[in-house]
Length: 387
Ligand code: KG4
Ligand code: ZN
Image (tube, rainbow, N blue to C red; front, side, top):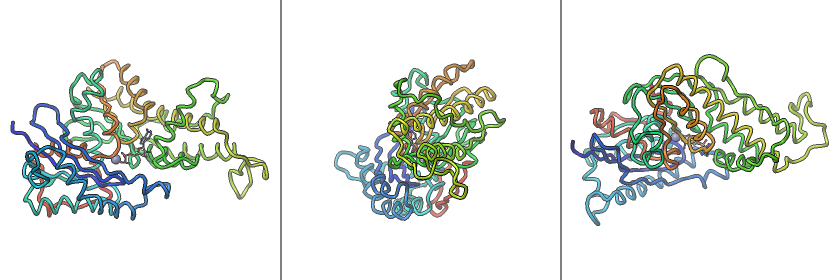
């Protein structure tokens, strides 16, 4: 089969990203280049993503990022520049949603312009689908071979996608064939990490900060007696939905209680007025650890229940929260104990948070299934659904 090359563009949130992916129908997909221009520094002073700032930064970075990835791809011969590389591109994949509309529009406009000017087909990709396909590129072999058996996920595959914008359990029966078994009814897991981090005075994005703080509690003596006993939302309820806002509130009340602040300003319950104090380092670390334990246990329990019900041939983890060490470990352990022995797929760290390589991987499968579109048929959609 002829080699196909996809230029991929991602700009749904706070990373401007472009990548070139190559596939030949049989071997695993190869990442020829993968460039991510992060905006994290710009948003940190706001404690989260500021949509206006994000779209302006995307507009500044999109063309240099695309140019850099084309040059780095090695296509078009030595010194040929981005134009020569572009001649070897078969299609342009772009995230069209869901995400921040102003951010999405920048990537989609860039993709449409290139598609129009150079007469290339365009492949609109759902951002969730992109995350799922982070398990379909060659790099997973390196990070994951003993569990994945060196293969891409076989179908049906059970996918736990966990990021800042969504949390869901998806049964993937084939390429492009998804059934959502459950989703979060309120906050996404990553969003909960970010909000709890803010509460503890940590920087955005909160996931890595909470994880680092939680690591301090490896030492048993540092554990505060009795723990904090945060809830594991919905684990004993039927179905596969999640809910993280109650957990976030439980953390808020715990923090207020420890600080001696009233829980509720109208009734003044909680600590005694006039005796408010700062949390100790150990208390903050305990909160981070116990919150992380609650999120990880909840996600993994629900995934286990779904795996037992649907008996998939493979289990995949995807999305920014898949960067979490404790979640990666717990997911592996849970999947390793399943009696039908599914293969286990966990993307390498650089493919967990937003990137364009995963968009290109999804784009490649759409391309070989002849699902490309003309530039005028593609638009950004902030609320795009996977199914
Ligand atoms: O997939 P992603 O880059 O963007 C969305 O599609 O939302 O995910 C970003 C989310 C953020 O909420 C961030 O706090 C979380 O992933 N995250 C983590 C870790 N690294 C990133 N959460 C927990 N532990 C981590 N190590
Ligand atoms: Zn994402």
